[in-house]
Image 1 (spheres, rainbow, N blue to C red):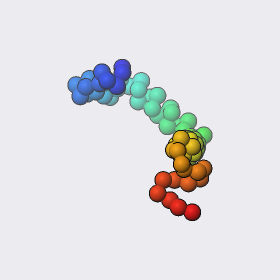
Image 2: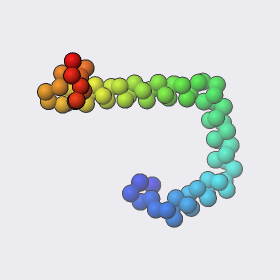
Image 3: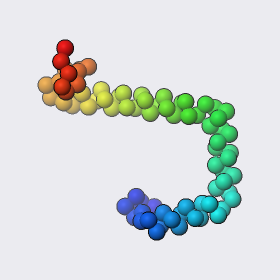
Image 4: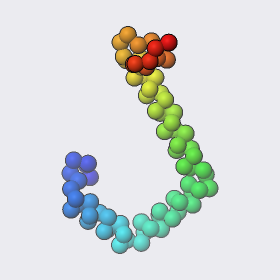
Length: 76
């Protein structure tokens, strides 16, 4: 489902379907164990932090008149 097609009613139906189907709960428990065993949350946080840092560098590079390592409003 595309995000543009999501309505409160559709979201409510989807949530109800997930809550009523035990296979979703079983899969969630499985992934909970896998994430805990592999330190998945720490890994995910590291990946997200690296992505934000990379994005900040790229944003700085796109801003005309701003030297690398500087941000708008900051001075040396």
